[in-house]
Image (cartoon, rainbow, N blue to C red; front, top):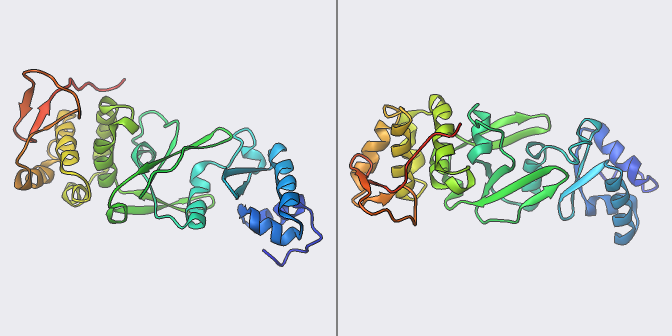
Amino acid sequence: MNSISHQTSAKDYIAELAARGQHHFTSADARAVLGVSADATKLALNRLARQGRIASPSRGFYVIVPPEYRSLGCLPADQFIPALMVHKQLSYYVGLLSAAQYYGAAHHRPQEFQVLLEKSRRLVRSGRVRVRYVARKRLKEVAARNFNTPRGEIRVSTPEATAVDLAGYPQHAGGLGNVATVLTELADSINPQLLPQAAATAPLPWAQRLGYVLQFVGAGSIAEPLKNYVNDIVSEHTPLVPGRFLPNAERSPAWKIIVNSELTLEA
């Protein structure tokens, strides 16, 4: 980047970056190229942000907003998250409902782009773009694959890992009823033999809950290897919905689930 003349304006700087196919930069990058003070750099970048030419989804990190995304007020999240994660030196993957979208199974378009990290971070709001960070233990063990975007590649949890996370984080997926609905669409993408491996990266109740929900939506055959995994290592029943007490709740012996909530598919 430093090959650009120090006499250039901030507007010319981002135009040159865009011409090279570079759609992100940091405030430090801009200051080094513009050759002005930190305050002057900030003023120049703020001016471009007010014009809708750039956006800052994270402190000190900027994206160039092409005309087709000016109404959005930012690049779509999938087009800047990989670069932002490199900038922050964070391991990540796109998960939950956002991952399900890549397999044609989001049901309704998620209102937030969901990214899993080793530690949670604050919600990002940039223009109309929202990025929700969710903490995931053993994140580096979770299977993921790369998908192409207009700006490169992005890391997305596999269908099996996505299913496990949906069962583990129903509060981030519109509730267990919506999880069940999404799983009816995701089931065709799931490799049953890979489910136990995916479940092994998560708490045991997630596997129990996932198996019960898959059976509920008529995908019991897909869950069969998972059932063997659960029956081999699980000895105690776990509630379908954590923290909810229901007197005389039925029990599912196949999945060792306490059925403490009625499960219905979302419309």
